[in-house]
Length: 535
Ligand SMILES: [Zn+2]
Ligand SMILES: [Zn+2]
Image 1 (cartoon, rainbow, N blue to C red):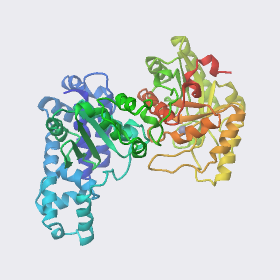
Image 2 (image 1 turned 90 degrees about the vertical axis):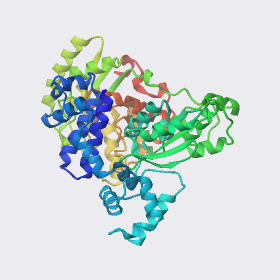
Image 3 (image 1 turned 30 degrees about the horizontal axis):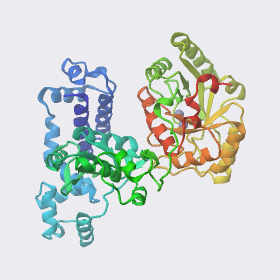
Image 4 (image 1 turned 180 degrees about the horizontal axis):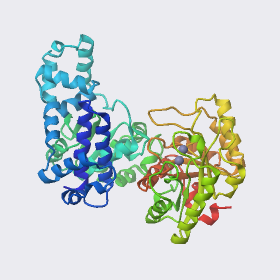
C-alpha cells in the first residue's frame, strides 16, 4: 500500500465518522493524519509495520492502531462495517440530489435499498412518498433532480486545491487529462472533468466506476459518465476517441462561453491540432474565460519565481523554524525567502513585539550565515490598525528588509473608511506590499469593501506591490483583480503565506491566479533577483 492509498482510506474513514456524527475531533484527526501521510516522504506502510508511525505529526495511539490494521490486513474493520451500514453510494447520490447525509441514510433504510440504481427504481415506482419525512415537495424535488439533464454542478464550488486533488487522482488512475474548471485554475471549481483517450470506452468507464473516489455513477452514456463522491460532488469522465481527443479536451476544459465562440470545433487528436485547424494560436487554459482569438501574452510561469516573500514560522502561527523554512525554500530552487510573522494586533495567534522582532533578527542572521548565498529576509506581516496606523513603531519597521501590511480585524468597515485605512498604511515608507488585499475567504467570507482603483493609485505612487496570496481559500488578489492592477501599472507579488514547509508548495496556485490575470514575468516582482527588490 502506498501513501496515497493509505491516505485515501483514512480520509474515507473520516468522512464516514462525520456521517455517523461521531466526535468531530476524531474525524478531523483522521483527516489531518491523511493529509500528513499524503505529504510524507517515507513509505508510511513500513513505518506502521515497524511501530514507528507515531513519528509522524498528528498520529497518536488510536490512529496508529488503525494504520497497522490497514497495512497488515488491507482494511480497517470498522471502516468496512461503516461502509456496509451507511452505503456511501447512496450518501453520495443523496447529497448530490440535495439531501443531507443523515437523510440519505434514513431514506435508504426506509426503502430497503442499497444502491443508486435501486433508488432510481424506487423513485420511478412512486415509493419515495412512503418514506416518513419525505413530503410531496421533497419528492418532486428529488424526481426532478434525478431526471435533470442540465450540466451537473456541486452544491458549492470546491476550493482549487481540493478540486485538483480529486480530479488529479481520477485523471492519474485513468491515465487521463485534467479538464474542467481545474484546468483553468478557477478559484472555486464547479465543473470537475477528466478526459481520456479510449478506442473502446467500456474499460475506461468501468475503471471510473470502480475508483475509490467515486461512490456512485449517476449517469452513463456511450462515451461519458457522471460519478459522485461521498460528498455528493459530481465528477465527469469523457472517454474520447483518440483522433478526437484534443477536441474533447478543449470542450471539457471550457469555459462554455469561450468554447461556444470557437464552434464548430474541428476534430484533432490533440489540442494544438484543434487550434491549428482553427487558424488561431493555442491559448493557455487560464485565459479561456471570455471569447478570445488573438495571440496570448508570455505568461509568468512557476519556474520564473526566484523567492517567496510571505511566510510564517513558529515565532507566530507557523509550524516550522526559520531554518527549516529556509531549507525548504532552497529545495524549491529559490534564492530568497522573507519571514513575515504576525504582529500582536492579529489577536487570535501570538504576534511579534519590537523585542521579538530584534530577537528573531539573530536567528535569521544565524540562518543566513549557515545557508549563504541563499538569503533569508527579515520581514513582517504587520497589522493595519483600524485607524490606519501600523502595529509596530516606524523605527522597527525601518530595520526590516520586507514589510507586508495586512488587514485582519475590523473588516466590516464601510468602503470609504476601509479605503482610507489601507491608503494610510501604504503611505508608510517601510511598507513594500499589501497582503491579501480584498480579505476574502472563498465561499466563507465576502470581500472587504475596498476601493481597489484608489488603492492601485496609491500603490503606484508609493511603489508598493499587491500580493496574490496563494492560500487556497484566499487566492487574493483574484485573477480578475490582478488584471485590473496590471492595467493600472501596479506590480504584483506571488506569495504563498506558507505556515509550514509544505505550504510553500502553494506557489503554483498563486502563479496560476496571476496567469488568470494575464500577468507576465515582468509584472511579478519576485521573478527578479534580490538585488533588484531590496532598496
Ligand atoms: Zn494575513
Ligand atoms: Zn501571513
